[in-house]
Amino acid sequence: DAGVIQSPRHEVTEMGQEVTLRCKPISGHDYLFWYRQTMMRGLELLIYFNNNVPIDDSGMPEDRFSAKMPNASFSTLKIQPSEPRDSAVYFCASSDRGATEAFFGQGTRLTVV
Amino acid sequence: GEDVEQSLFLSVREGDSSVINCTYTDSSSTYLYWYKQEPGAGLQLLTYIFSNMDMKQDQRLTVLLNKKDKHLSLRIADTQTGDSAIYFCAEGGSQGNLIFGKGTKLSVKP
Image 1: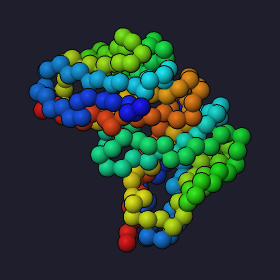
Image 2 (image 1 turned 45 degrees about the vertical axis):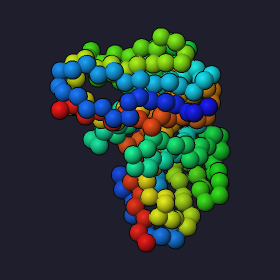
Image 3 (image 1 turned 60 degrees about the vertical axis):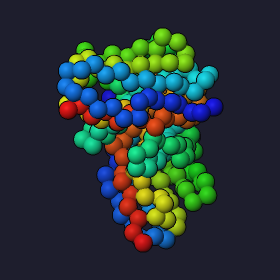
């Protein structure tokens, strides 16, 4: 397996534009997590899914953020409209049910200008 | 709520031992983890410890767990310049998620 795959690796967009980040988890993993990493706040859990169902979205900062998992092999995190303070590295991770390890993707570095 | 605290920076000389400390709040966590993040990369699991263990050793890495004090530490023996990275402590949340600390940036001087 190629691991967790995120795209794009880098995204630069203008304030007010819609941004969509994509994630392909490891095949067979039941859990999928979206994290955001900034210098100020460290690594924050935004939302996670179990068997494609959102379990906890309390970390989603605002209504501008939304996440979907239409099937077991794909998830999106959308920001609409984007703002400069959304600039961060966004990580997707997946894990087995009961596993002791979450596998992380390489992250998407988002810059909103 | 669940929270994980760790110091932000640690600087050591090559060949010395590094000790990174962490405290956590959720006593029901089954596993506690150490992740490593190199510049520009994602997080990689280094090691983990089951909550009913006191110590786990894996080559140059030693994890100590004091469950009473909710204190976790990672010791890296014979620290090398390649060990320079950010190290994250994490506890398993009550519903399968991971709660991370803010990370400790380890700098290794030659």
